[in-house]
Image (cartoon, rainbow, N blue to C red; front, side, top):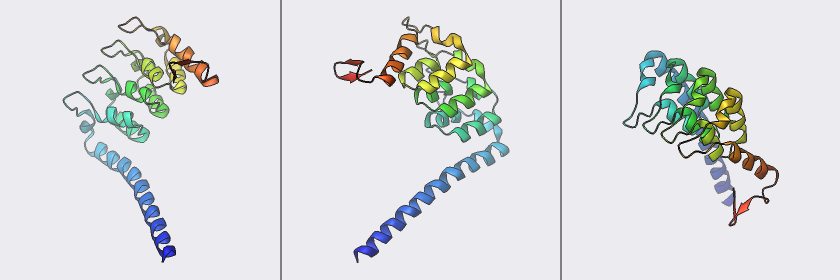
Amino acid sequence: LSVDVEVTLAFSFFIIFVLVIITVFLVADIVKILMEAHPELSMTVDPSNTTAVHTAALQGHTEIVKLLLEAGSNLATIARSNGKTALHSAARNGHLEVVKALLGKEPSVATRTDKKGQTAIHMAVKGQSLEVVEELIKADPSTINMVDNKGNTTLPSIQLIILNLFSPTLITITGTNI
């Protein structure tokens, strides 16, 4: 009896896995069909001025971001009501491929600031994603010295991230790694 239960559980997990994979692929296919039929949908915003590309970038859905960018050429430059672009969100969450897609479509978005005066590189530093920081510096090296509304640049934080990567126990303040 226990063998039957184990087989049934294993099969159930397999079916769930397959459904998740199918769903991921179908979502991209559905978005593609929608964008081909109604490209204007890509420009739809909610009350905080969030677009579908913001949401896809936040969640790291690279293929959907690319499909949406094909439909709306200036989507990468649209900022939410807090001033953050899709690049800010992707950078904060360490979604390197999304960052590359957004910069590939609109390189100038790397210097866009939010209401706090912060660029995507500030967000990447907060998310401690060195790969994203490197990509943003490649896109526009001047961003490393951009100052936010509080007078902060990202360079000292980038140095701390690098130090922490090579020696995580060196940089500890009150028991919390920086």
